Image (cartoon, rainbow, N blue to C red):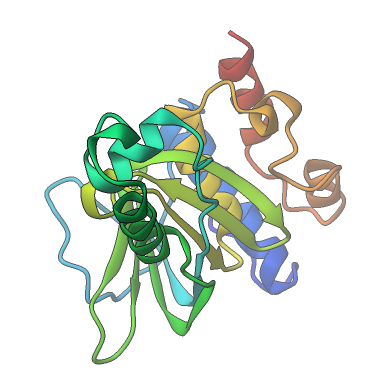
Length: 226
């Protein structure tokens, strides 16, 4: 049995990385053993077979999406539902294009502030008192990356009309979120191939502290390279 991390050995960020390795290796990469998850509380209603993997305060940001080139033919259709600028007067086209692009693409980055982050095998949910729940299912993700220590950036096409949504979660569980998505849906992700979703030498560091962690990095590199 793989035991829970000794929280007194590591700092809080390292402890969460240790637990991430246990969860990913044992529950998703067939490493022998079990993971004893702590008793967690969440407002999230779980479906059958879904488990709470992490629940902790975090910060969420909506990021401004890059607008597509206004010279692409597809942009005309996406913006105002026409096939050619000759279908309407140029002035009307310009007005419609400006209005639609402003509405869809001129959004500024928006910091949603602090909330409670819940991570399961199926999704990531972010909740704030009195606000609607924001959640992303891993199978809906079109791009994911770790952009800084404790920061995971996620892109989906689940906005209105299939528009692109880009968000950041600032959380010590960023590597867990990344790995949960990558080992199942992004198995050729450069970070899996290189092992750079964990800090260099983390496993050796754990060994020196007498808390060996599961070989999640090596196992993930194996599925990425297969």
